[in-house]
Length: 209
Image (cartoon, rainbow, N blue to C red; front, side, top):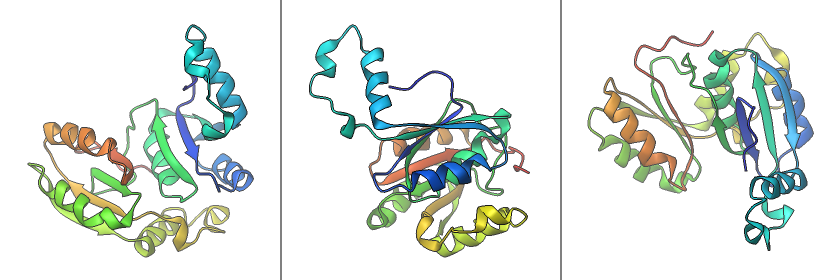
């Protein structure tokens, strides 16, 4: 269903404030271009992608396909920061990137798990703690996430306006220097319905500026 090209794709929730998101994300550092793919356009993409399998299209309605933001970056190094900012917003259901982030927007942490359902927070924390090589697990609540967000973008006043605690996501932060652990954690949590998204950074990745 994905169209080749965008560096970052963000799928919107059903109640997303689309125009507000478009205007806000377009102003972010590192965003060179952004476009909206509506549910109807996603259906056209779907039909084109599976043109040789018309049976797959039968019964698929546009309303079943979420709208998405397609984002082109000015440089691949912005991928991690842009993806993390998108995942922190409640209007965003999922985010994928086509490039590997070269910098870490969460200095000191190289495993960041965004929680979609707070009721599973304890289970997710315990499962993360059970992974060999994981250390210093911390839970970052919405208040702390908002303070982090505002601090990171203190010099860009328009990005801070309109962002509230309810727009942030709870996240688990952890550290590891073991590349095998990073791979295991990514595989384990990416398919978990209670996980909104996960960011993995190689040890020693420079902080995003």
